[in-house]
Image 1 (tube, rainbow, N blue to C red):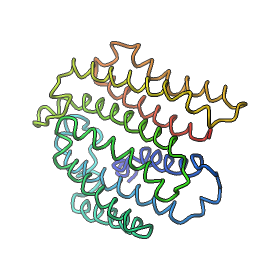
Image 2 (cartoon, rainbow, N blue to C red):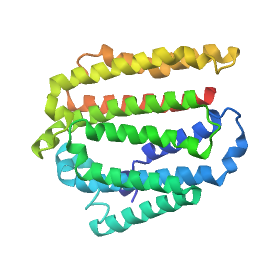
Image 3 (cartoon, rainbow, N blue to C red):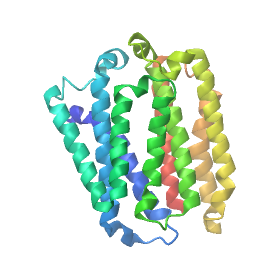
Image 4 (tube, rainbow, N blue to C red):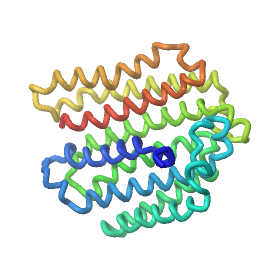
Length: 286
């Protein structure tokens, strides 16, 4: 049963929920713990989690064949989850998400409906297209953060935009690395991901360039953060920012042979997830 639940990527869902909740609590121009008692906060988080979980479910359904090549030990559908239960579960998750969004506003209902359609199209066809699949997932992650402002207009726009940009690019990097990890299975099944289109050597150059860009984004935004932080906390933030966000990415760049074996791609993907998690946690400084 526990293995079957892995299809929903509990750690990813936790990170997504934490991102929205921390934005509510710490990016507010007038922080108030009372926000935790706003029903709209929990409706938004629940709706986001249900939509994402449904997306994971349908994605794994369409990926069953290639996953037997790329990661056979992680194939869940057909082993731990019966195929006949998949579509009812998918429908139920999306209905809960739509209900949660409707209880907040009609605009949010339309937005979540769009999310559901885009995630289905991604899982069905679009993830096999160069750039489109990766950019779509990165975009949806960024929007899941920006939508917080719909529920709480008092969120600091400058900080929210930075974290949305950071989420976009670090997720784009991670998606690209995951495509490299799945290169052989994707190529065998005729997928036209950017990794397949460029080949492994040029894909490594692309990943290196994107990593450098993210480091430049972090460095250029560093001074901006200081206008929102009390002076006594500045040195703590600086140490955290360098060690937990920049050093892992610099280490990735300093290891030229890191992307030569299959386990390397998984390690790089996990480093990106770690940087995303520590980046989200940095909201607590504000």
